[in-house]
Length: 406
Length: 225
Image (cartoon, each protein chain N blue to C red):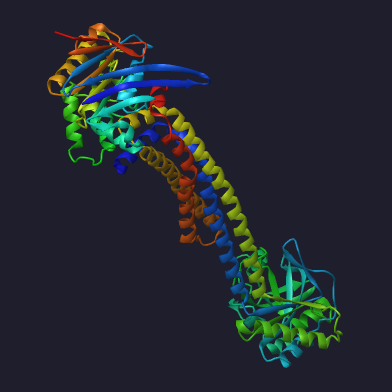
């Protein structure tokens, strides 16, 4: 048999029922389309998370006072703990070999005033080393130094959002602001960092020296966080256990008792994200499998209907010399053509929608060739799998009965 | 060319057994034009389906070109139909939505080799039946007589030795009947073996010999002058 010639004739016949053909393909189209979109969203979010963690500093451990629980996707301190102190940061540095910096910090939301304008923002009291640990850069002015911290100077470095809220277009450097009731001199502006992985604005903050913050503003002796920078990403694990040992010792915690602090490892956060994206991928695969199954059944249904309508055609073909295998191949080719057609439409549609989503969600569009290839392959398998039964049925028709069928 | 000996055929419908053909014996010589005549329900179509290798007989033997049909499997029978037999049906049996040309090409799709000059051959055949200007028309756009002419062109495309025509004029007006019968007569003159099945004595007169079938048996034979 001349297969290409036969496929051309098949195609003509499928095109006679355009609407029906497209409807029967909707299952496969939607299935493949969903896979493309979901995989692309998964990849996009992962890329976004990785870039945020890199911004944060990938070899950074965050020590929080008290036990931190993840509630509604955000880290929350369960209760106020007063045992974490600035000197803990110094002990960490002194007693470990895998740590570059340990930077203490305390923060509180307070009202900030400049002239008539005011805003409420996060006030972070910390030391000058925070610049290196958190990858902060300055867009204007300078950061405070160790002396200014020691001297409890009232100097402030503003985040971009705060500048926009109370200064507008004005240059804030050298101006005086009031945090709470205390006047501060603005000495610099931080370069914008954007949102963190929880969607909080990292530019809505004011950084001031830790001593100034504790003594003059918060009236506290304890801190709520220490940012620890490991020497490199491979020593994260050792840095974490050193930090834990030092703090347990400093806080006189007996063996068997729980920590009064929490160490968050950025790498483990990343791992957790990867893990959840793996779960997500599994879920997508399940959805894809179900919709492809539905799509396959759709193809089988349309093939059975099509064969019923074309019993006479099958009789004619058999009469003029078609073998059973010719009829089998013809209908297999048709179901394959249908499923591949559906697959291609689904892939194109899915990629288009994924690109649009990527533009709006502001992440890089990415889709591995593997996913496209596997999707395409599965439509081929689908076409054969769900085409065999109808095609077999068509091939086994009795010639005389088929010819007489009206 | 064709040798039928004691052919019987019965159909089983539930518990009821119907004997449609009871002992049919006759032969057809190469180049002959034979009419098989009988009123409906006398087993004409069953005989035609057996002759066309589309239906297995219940008993007897059928040799075509010296080959015993009983010894062939389904694929070999398909090849035989493709190469040696051209069918012309009462209800035309063209593929809807497919052009006259593609309909004529259909048997070539199933030939062992698709000839390079297939299109030329098909076009020529359509011209010879007077449809040279309609080769791209679909069946829906053609009249009954034109349908049957396309079907004849299709029957001829593989250059078969035998044309099996089952009531080819049954659905046609008298004008078309003459046209179709003239074409068959011409094919006979060109050397084709033609077996014509009909219930109409006026149609049967076109043949050189008429075999009368009644109640599943041949009861008379008549040679025209």
